[in-house]
Length: 234
View 1: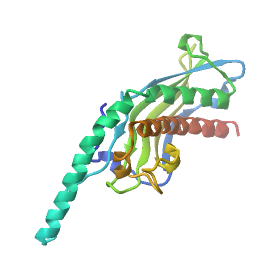
View 2: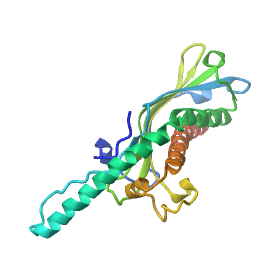
View 3: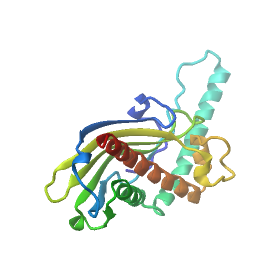
View 4: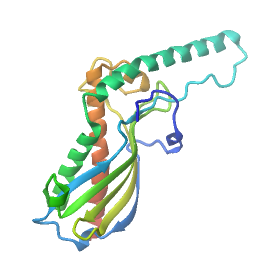
């Protein structure tokens, strides 16, 4: 999926809360299995590229003041021109980092640690497999100057590789505001990261942002697994 800097999708219907995250667990048999001295791998299926959306920039209702309306139209045209300009940098950044690979690697390490299993890369050598199906993920902002957020919508399942038994499954939706620390404090970033901020970033700063997106995505999935494991063992 190509990067898009344009109108918001249906995700704007989600409640925007700091570090907002919800999940629906369909099954939790985590306490029924022993993971010690066993192996685990992670497989994932996700869009080719994350989405980068900035928000709807339409004139809306006229104010009745022709000059004010003209200025509003002019501001929208400027933002659209900036959106077109940033497209090239986003595409360049996408060639420098495999977001899906980073997500999978981070989820693999955390899952093995939480379960007490050994991480292996080959699926056929694993006793258990964490399967991650990502529907949508990326960077979202409800307006050009509003705080931008990481978001992910995914389905995750832990499977017994030998029998195909589904041990655990959860549907996950999460959002998290992007902080300046993501970029190590570049000059373009001050207090908050907005869609306008992203338009001013260099290719390398966008790469750093996408790496943080991958880490965020892996974290919310494995945090849900960890929390459900604790609940199952009570």
